[in-house]
Image (cartoon, rainbow, N blue to C red; front, side, top):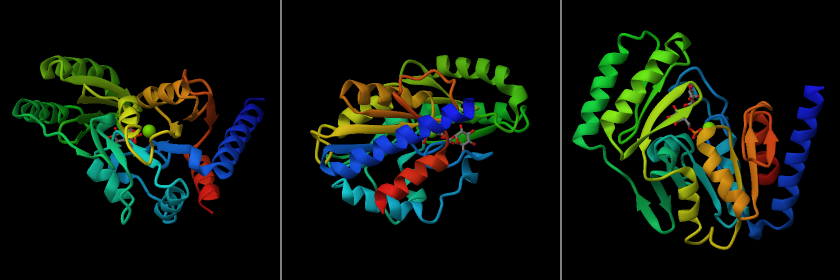
Length: 259
Ligand SMILES: O=P(O)(O)OC[C@H]1O[C@H](O[C@H]2O[C@H](CO)[C@@H](O)[C@H](O)[C@H]2O)[C@H](O)[C@@H](O)[C@@H]1O
Ligand SMILES: [Mg+2]
């Protein structure tokens, strides 16, 4: 029963996006999360694989949309660019804290205090075998996918580090990860910034993501009369109006739209 329900949802979400975008490409803007949405999740942050055809398909789809396709990710902007080279799509990185759009580029530096915090966290993580610390400049992620037994202790310690970091940083929960990210912006805020300039201005958003951090962009899509698609198994609470069960299905939609 559940797989039948999933299939129906997948078909509905896929058909909806195909017909909306193919019928009126000048009306829509697409905002795509990376990990778990365009790419399959992997055991470690650097073990992800970008299917060979994907960068070119995103480029062709972006052209069809008049350039109104943006990546909106927890990765740094530089990391996202490296994944999809030679293309450099409009991108929001670090959960919205960094952005590159037609209006220009905004990046952030880690403060000396945050550098010190990252050193302390990295040193502490040596006591938790399998826990990986991902240094993202003005953000840091503590991954426990390879050491799930440390989830609780890591959660407690990341709450502590969030207090040490102060109000300019926020604790972001994700898939087997606790992150400290700049507090002042979210993925939803990034969408609103994209909408301030062409080619996004006056278009309607289609947002696709798989995690808690994507909920703020789903809310913007819903408020603007757009489409919000959560990727993953049925069950996770979400304000998305539609669902696709896997990143592979998202890539099928991208391939069909780009063809
Ligand atoms: O907003 P996203 O593009 O989805 O990025 C969210 C985080 O993704 C990465 O971590 C996740 O993916 C890893 C690779 O599949 C996986 O090993 C990890 O367990 C996931 O949490 C990335 O490493 C983070 O920096 C991003 O914030
Ligand atoms: Mg994701």
